[in-house]
Image 1 (cartoon, rainbow, N blue to C red):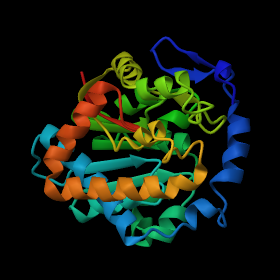
Image 2: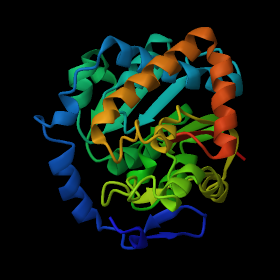
Image 3: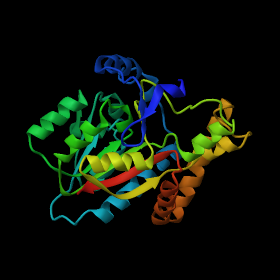
Image 4: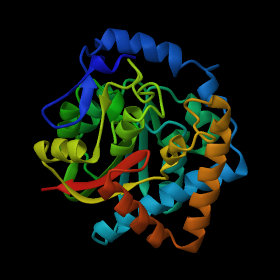
Length: 294
């Protein structure tokens, strides 16, 4: 991908200069994600990976519970693009009323089949329209690694406003792209390409400020931000540069699991504080924002 094929939009984050049509995207995702024999959904997680995934959900849940007002009845949870169903399963176990929607049930069926009664497969936008027509409101809406894929992030975030009430928390996680670190690595020749630009898979390339600007324009106010493990720090080390030496990637992943799990075991709250500062610095491979209606 040529870096000239992306431009900075009015919100301050990058987008593809030529946004694919919905038909092109449907064909792309039909081949990449939604086939039953797709390798993405055949992946078996190690015990360490499952622990890491659960810890990341717990860290976010701590922030959600800090922002939400206590409720007498079951809180409601909507996972838009719920994938393999790990987050859906966690909140269900916590006693929430949950609903997950995604284009295919295969990932959920493979990893969390007990969640299928709370799962709806099909076109996400059609499912959202039906929920909107039912005038259902949710206490928490979860959008994990979805927004970078959609043609019109502004339209989706505006629609989600209609599913929210005054105390709703919207959690959005996206890759942290064109970061200070990534730009510096390119500038100094430590990497030979903007490896994070993957078209047509990712249409938008968010940074913290751009994501916050988009949220504000759609009627959301950012209450809390965190990054995640800064795995890209490895790219400054020629012996651990997984972009230039692909074989070092497994080691970088193992390092992430080890360090993040160790920090979580010391204190999930302090881990959130650490990642909050990283987000403020514009670092970390992912960004998560916790939004509420204005």
